[in-house]
Amino acid sequence: MISINKIKNEIKSEKYNYLSEEDKTQLEKYKKIASFWEVLSDKDNIGIIGLKENSGISEIVILAAENKYSEERIEIKLLEEIIEYSKNNKKHVILIKIYEDNTELLEILKSCGFIIESNKNKSNILQVNENDQLLLKYKIYEENELTEIIKEYWQRFINNNPEYENKEYEVWNFCYGEYLPNKLLKLVKEGKKTATSSALDIFETAEIDEKILEEGDISIITYGNGLPGCILKTEKIKHKKFREITEEEARLEGEGDLSLKYWQDAHRYFFQLEYEEMGKEFNEDIIVIFEQFKVIYDEDKMK
Image (cartoon, helix red, strand yellow):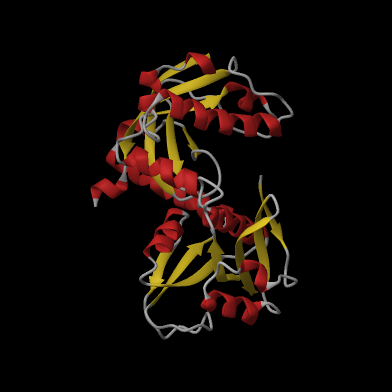
């Protein structure tokens, strides 16, 4: 069982003996001025992230993890924790510096919505050795900012597709967090994912303010940070039991190895989490809304 706990500065660096010497130095340097979150797997300390907070800014000063304990990268869990924390604490940007040759971490950061802000060595935002480093930024948008961005995106779509001018639309993203919405949206934009599944029971909870999509409905799909990624039109809707999903339907979802087993394993895990939050028990007779869609607008393909 993996858990993430905020521990502030009572951390003991010797617990993280798998880190490089540089990371240990950073850990000691920031112990008194940063807050820390650690990842535990049973009783093992397998990851750490340190955050130094300024006015409106979160600065990640250390990020390190072992991943032999989990199929999902621990760094992603830590980054999503920090993003959620920063949003809740009214920050407007998260910054991190990494070495240019750390391509693995660079891809992880980009998959969670970070973008390269600069590769110049003049910035003193993070007081570390700056040779060959990249500065990456995650921008946190206010709700009114995102509302305006979505409206402008929709208007550009209408300018190119006036037949939809009076059509209503929904705004949503796949799954939860940062990584999964971005990963699945990428599959959609690449044409690999043309369907998605939801548990019908979820729409009957008071916390969900979303309509059940119908054939012909239009949706703006967003990244984890709320920015629009593309516009979909719902082509087909089926309501069927979890255990009735077919190999072909699993393939249309475009995930993993495209097999029915992958679909079942991934969705069983995801639906179980949702049902636990509702205080219900998942079973394979639950009704799944299986939606097939097509992309009708993607500005990235128009550039």
